[in-house]
Length: 473
Image (cartoon, rainbow, N blue to C red; front, side):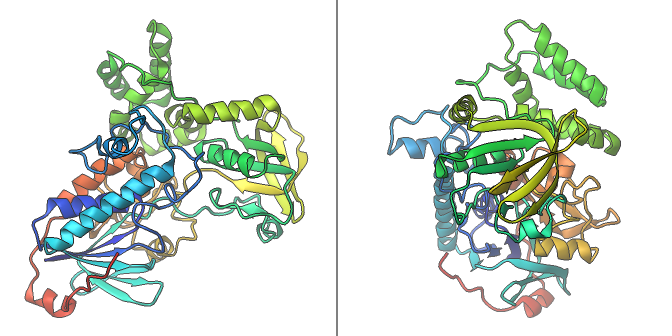
């Protein structure tokens, strides 16, 4: 029986556990699942209960298992015949489905003799032991396993460098855009730093919670996500030829020219079809770029890619449009230089193309700058320990950890750490596209197949001995 630990209970951790339990023979696995204080399947993305926080993918094709991609839609239709495959549903609905689906896999696995230990604590340290690994959680308990899978999702957001300590301690600077406490008084002006999908969530929630507040969203380019079409775009007929042409010239300048020329010169072509068609080839394209070209992408092209690739559902776009048309929402291109004070916060920022900074006052400032991926600068206890002790390498551009595309974690010298694997957002530096549901599901399946059961030696049994407690989830 193989003993392994899964760290994280969001979409990545849950999809991996479900895949692992379904793929391996009865009684062959002993899993320690360190889930933190959250329910399986929730994580940051699906813990929200706000109906305005929508999936940015259509409901068709995002089932828990690859052999049943329509299961999510089928489950909903069993109780509501009006749900369509092209709908963008609240994320809480998908969280309910993922939680229930994972639980069914767990219940079935326990019946088939697998052993599962549910640990409602966070992993704080991971080190090698005589026969594998030991993990310490924040309750002081040590867990001995053979292998570990890091599926921790996005890192907690660190305050931006421009935010002074007095602003951070005021309670009016919010690092978590999905947890907005009630302020002492109704805010008159709310500033959202960021204009991506995270910022869209923050804007819509703030507009609902405080209907009289004025809202300002600021980012370097002031570019909101583009809008999904009401129906999926027809695939581009020559997508494979475009992929081949891009791979022949691994240069951002050439890639932009090729993609833009394709969109301009193909009559009737929906640009969304070209962008979506790049998704299956993203890892291959990203791998073709050297570190210098990847750095150029982050500085000059990332904003455009994110806005085009990660689009708003039509319903969200209409609400954002209404807020802008009514004058309640202002979207500006600029850079925040300083956030200080307490009540209200003073925000100094400079509009794009201007030299002189401006000063604004905000009752609340919400940081909505997207996924945290820089393990070199994080408050996450486990990643801080692994990087600080030189056990895990960091991506040189701050995009997660050093790893292979398979999820194999690398040490700082580039050598593999055979017993430690990663899944999801931590792999962004290696594969780039790793946080979407289809990519997480595929990666979970491949990693689950690779981590098959292995027989225990006598020495393993002496050190790891004892029975796993099958605690209720």
